[in-house]
Length: 247
Image (cartoon, rainbow, N blue to C red; front, side, top):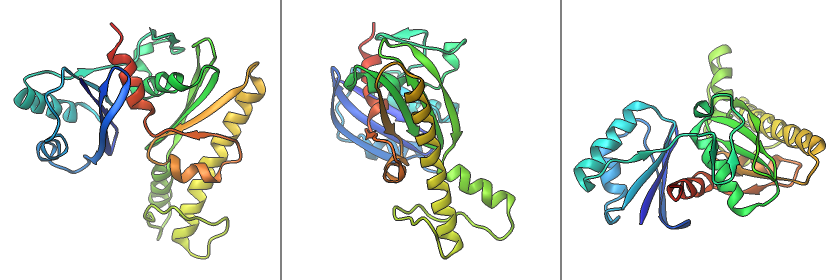
């Protein structure tokens, strides 16, 4: 059995996997945390895996901490995957394939597990990424835009007397206080951008397009969107399961 780790800028999602079937799973916030204590608590009940397969976009420091922890507790080194030219029927559009974010690569592979047609894969994390995959597995390219928190922090950094509001699920079109206005504005901006991008892709694509959202802010953005889209919080983990099986 393998252990899959999706290490984002703020949190780690993990799952045990048998083949491509996700079993026990969980999520922990790693930002500003002691990694050793966090890992020992999160995986105390996990039997020693055959492999630890990792998507990491949080940098070298957390990779080093993970290396040290897995060697000390399980006597194995994690496998840090990266984007390649091709994998499991998916072809990377980037001129330099390894420069595509590994989380985007894994999310596209994960989305293809459940859909056979053309895809618009949206990851709503610290940044929002959008990728188009044709039904034949050809990645057509993508876009990157600021995520919800990044938009709010930009407002705070550039405007006097504004502070970033806490995350909230309920928003209204017109707010009656500054915190709500910032929260609503950033959520509507993200939803509108994804709507427009997916709509333009659908208009130019010669085949039906499925839009799939993942990432920590997907559940907040999805209710404000006009297009039909599916929410799948485990896309990256599903893609890692595919990569774990690629020889």
